[in-house]
Image 1: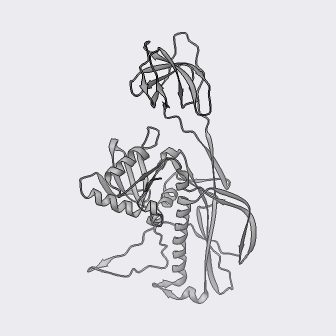
Image 2: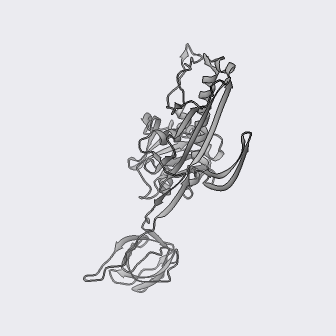
Image 3: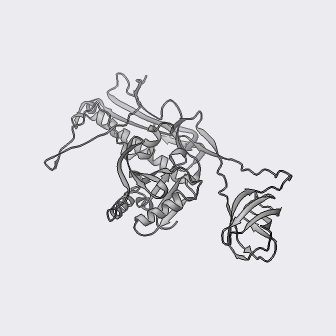
Length: 404
């Protein structure tokens, strides 16, 4: 039988030092487990921050998401004007009698007196001007801001208006990797330790990076009766892959041309990260490509800007960029964006309150010693079963170089 677990990996630091301007080799103790958390910041954040790692009882998990209306709607044709009431088409099917609106151009206030011709996305409404008078002509498109429902004295209560929660689904991806060396290789010296110790640590580091890429880029999929063939035989079963962060963010994407500068960053923060009052927390966590990090660092050197370095948040060092209204964006370099051209100079921003890592089984990641007695060799297996849950799509956003 296989030996018990070696244990669940702990994240630590590796370091080097410089003497008289010359780099020296590191002396790595083979008994010390070394992991580079900076190379997998997204996974480190999700797995190390209290409340971000949640167990799930089945390989397919689901949750309800309910994003309330922003309260601002549109009338494409505008108002013809000249009468106390007018029938217009609004892009909101949930309007009821008594709903109040203010339009953005003339700042006229209306009450809805009748609703007709509902579709899944629009309805025709009769607007009456308040205070009473003739409606002024307004060229479309016109934005209407909701001001709630208006009731007359002793009037009937209006029909309720609500939204139906959407059920979102994701799956647990099961990943596995193994490593084996001969008995002679296991004791051979390598970097002042054994080759077995070093190979095992390097494999765990690579496994963490594979998990990071999966959490960032994978696409949701459940494939039944999938056949997988290997040297150990053929198996047929259900293949599940989790939905990654980049595939979760479908609508809140912003593109730019040229070199990233502070003006472009601030525009992205205003229109992408905090576009509306419903876009989430005042503090966001962002993952940057190397070109984006280098460009904004060069731009900020030309001026005085509130940029705090070296904050210890979520278990690793972060820079903090402060913008309008004391909103703050925490910055981490994402090494797994290096091979995506649009993200090398891009940014992915998440709301820390609305993103979670799901685990299935005893631990998020397990390292199992699979070495057998009386066999000349040593082997280990790394196993992980996990998925990502990102609620409230408008809370997360992407900035990509070039247009989308």
